[in-house]
Length: 205
Image 1: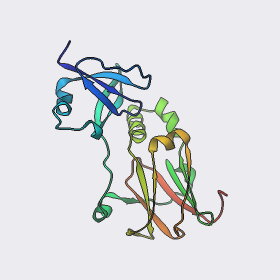
Image 2: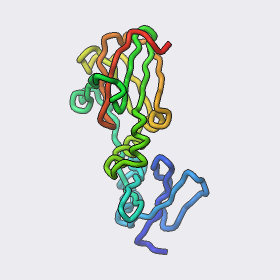
Image 3: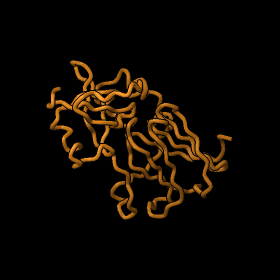
Image 4: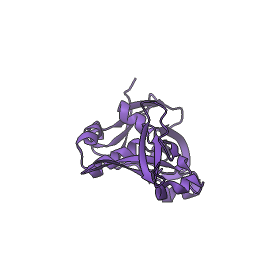
């Protein structure tokens, strides 16, 4: 047994399941085991860090596949910090150019959320940096879109929450709402560049 290396078991989302001096594999095909130097994981073993705050990220190198421990993006939880952490989502000329498109159908009170399908191509064929960015997006925690009065992030109207991984896999998500969002702005803590927001009077029946 090599006590200089520790075995880290994680699931398909990168969530850490165990850290042990020997392989601790349950047989679940969705689990992966890799090794890290003891010095990289010892803070988890002595409870200085929590495994819930980190995930295992795949890194492509010339010599093959490697892994690293990456801290999760923390969620914004205090209204008084909205201006510092949230960004207003602007409109692009064409929603199809966006990485994440948000369409608000006013009359039907429905929201259509789309992700550009090119991301799946880039995940297989992109540069190392592009692949890292997409994997960070897929592994990001629950993301929130905050609908507010026009240009006023402090006057909250509605919150829409989604999992980036689910959006990536399904490419289109639909949501209903009850608030009056006919003249709203949308703010979020971005998990990727390229958001676009558009309002439609009718459609998506």
